[in-house]
Amino acid sequence: MSPVIPPSPEHSSAPLLQVRDLRVAFGGKQVVHGVSFDVHAGEKLALVGESGSGKTVTALSLLRLSGDAQLSGSALLQGQGDLLQLSERQLRGVRGGDIAMVFQEPMTALNPLMPVGEQVAEVLMLKQALTRSQSAQAAIELLASTGIPEPARRAASFAHQLSGGQRQRAMIAMALASRPRLLLADEPTTALDVTLRGQILELLSDLQRQTGMAVLLITHDLQLVRRFADRVAVMEHGHLVEQGAVGEVFAAPQHDYTRRLIHSAPQRDVHEEPEVPGQPPAAQASGLRVAYPVPLPGVRGWFRKGEFVAVKDVALRLPQARTLGVVGESGSGKSTLAQALLGLLPASGELQVAGQSWQQPAQHNGAHNQQLRRQVQVVFQDPFSSLSPRLTVAEIVGEGLRVHEPSLAAPQQRERVQAMLVEVGLTEAQFPGLLERYPHEFSGGQRQRLAIARALIVQPRLLVLDEPTSALDVTIQQQVLALLQRLQRERALSYLLITHDVAVVAAMAHEVLVMKDGEVVEAGDVRQVLQQPRHPYTQRLVAAATLQAESSLPLSP
Image (tube, rainbow, N blue to C red; front, top):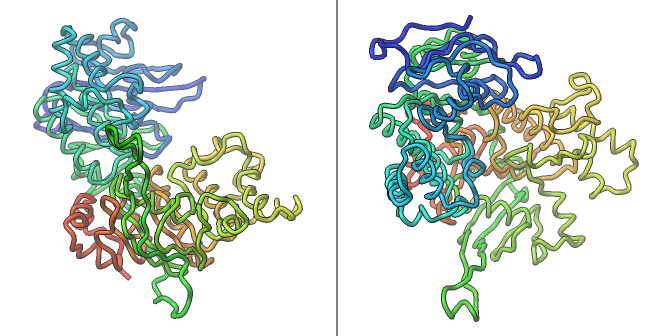
């Protein structure tokens, strides 16, 4: 039986939600094993665990949204009875009514064909029985309450016309439209920048205090739990292994798994020796500028185009065997900078990779550019979407060899692929038939190792790492960062690390650029910039990461 602790004095009344011995199985295989916990009115409970721990399935099962799952146990909601025994018609009144849900990725949860205001109004008409005009006005007021600027104008916008933070606020407005007693928030900040995460957390806390609703937060972000939740429940492999007040669990975790999660912050283990004089840099740029054409309004747009400057006058220098971190919020220009470095976007100014310039237009794939592409490779944020689901491991990892070394015989290719997989920690002993497997047969961390192997097999000098760990759990993130650090030492690799995670920059980088609105606002040694930030924007980023307050920046020599 899962551990259940007594309610705290401020929540001594009967629980709003009482879950007992919840078991979830798919096709006869049990994935959640006898979970029990309470959620009290006005309480913020965090359900924590890595991918595959069963936390999301547990939450979805409360509303019977977990597909063809076989459920047993009970989930008693005050005034509604056992959620697991209600009819489908009764459940429709609970879903989006007494219990509402905010999903992880609002871009997939929002209807792309309806303005967001209409989507909020639809809930108001269904759940509050308002007229069309009343619901339209109430939708604008709800959007305003979540902090969206110009709510009347944004209500007429479609999801793709909003920023990530605005889309998540619109999702929260939809959830609050029915005045729920319990809000299920499934990784509501994972896809957001660090400052936006803080804003969404503050918003949820403010709304929770104003409405008195309870919040069940599903997450793997322990810093988020520390800042937001009253109590925490920890899940591992479908079992609830520990629960209690946040302060008590973080100060003295009882279970080994909880201790492992808490101590899974990125560790700094990089080559700290000074740069070798006279060695050419892996990449350098000065006066770098990237602009996109945009239509001009009115008659002017008939004759010429305007431009949006995404990267303005950027200078950088990345020595061999070093890491340059580039941090900033969405829209800061950091990903555009990476694409210019990869020769995927035309750029003006001086830019050299491995001592050579891209032939313009940079997207041209002539012999010169193709040879230069071998020197600079990329590892993307989401390995599941960046690896073709139709190719085997042998085909994915060996793809670069077929392009850059077409004369290599098939047995030699296979041998090189196997050696590369061993180097990134994937062996035939662990995964029988490894080369014939497909990406869906691996975990998130293992897929990222495949992506790293694919990039390294052509022996590049420079790797562009675009948010390489943001889609991973904390323990897997730590393993991937340790792998990248080891490979850098052994292969003298240079990394351009694109991220919004200050802890990852602190663990990996030697130098850092801070970008805002396409410009570099601060640059220098990573210790100096993160421990003594000068620019107000950098100060906000570091403060939002809560790392200085936690004294956990991994910057000691």
